[in-house]
Image 1 (cartoon, protein in one colour):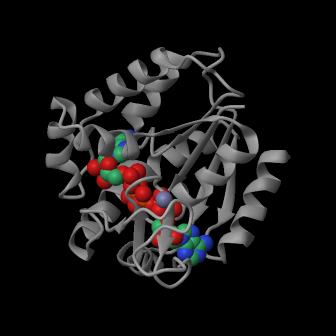
Image 2 (cartoon, helix red, strand yellow):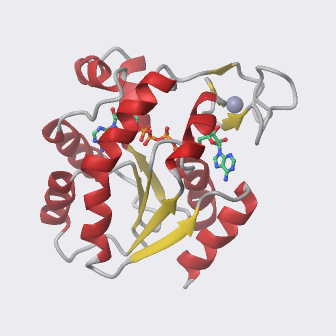
Amino acid sequence: MNILIMGGPGAGKGTMSAKIVEKFNVNHISTGDIFRSEIGNGTELGLEAKSYMDKGLLVPDELVNNMVKSYLDKLEDKKNGFLLDGYPRTLEQAKAFDALAGDGALSIDKVIAMDILFDVLAGRITGRRLCKECGEIYHLQSKPPMVEGKCDVCGGDLYQRKDDTVESLTVRLDEYSKQTAPVLDYYEQKGIVARINADQPIENVWSDVLKALED
Ligand code: AP5
Ligand code: ZN
């Protein structure tokens, strides 16, 4: 099964993606994570992406489309399909992905739309902490680590993302409304969207996501 998870910044896409990947054994393709790894490795692509990401702006379509294509080409273990997280997030990306996928093995079967009011997202973003080593996602209030600043899973140090500021969030929300919301309408027309109330405790959101995927 090929799944796409959509939602505003901090809606809980990464948190649900980790659970979906474990349960359904699919490849996780998060364009945000790939860019952050390119930045960490100091590549040319990373440097270019960073100039947009730090400001909360979307990275240009052509760069993202090419990156996803080459990532998919290199996937050796196809697992049970893939989970797209954070891509496509413009109409141009959605159309480019459709052209690449056609009706074949890459086409998207189900879209999970994480519905949440924008007012809730500032708290999600400013309280988020991530493990430097394994990427586990924490939140100071809703999912605190057992030992302050340390990952429960691997003991690694926790850090805050550079774009997790209120200033950058304002830009990210604006980008979402203008560029990404139309993508959801595009998939609604295909009749493959499941809308999830993302403003519930993590376990309840997960139970709704699971129901939608097992439907
Ligand atoms: P990306 O990495 O995709 O970030 P984003 O869309 O802003 O989403 P986030 O990762 O911030 O949030 P999330 O929904 O995953 O929430 P999480 O589960 O962590 O993109 C970053 C940047 O990269 C973009 O701005 C852009 O520049 C660039 N980029 C990436 N893809 C691109 C593309 N396709 N085109 C162009 N540019 C692209 O949860 C958030 C917090 O809330 C956590 O602390 C978590 O513990 C907590 N939480 C989660 N669920 C709950 C819950 N139910 N209740 C309480 N707390 C919860
Ligand atoms: Zn860890």
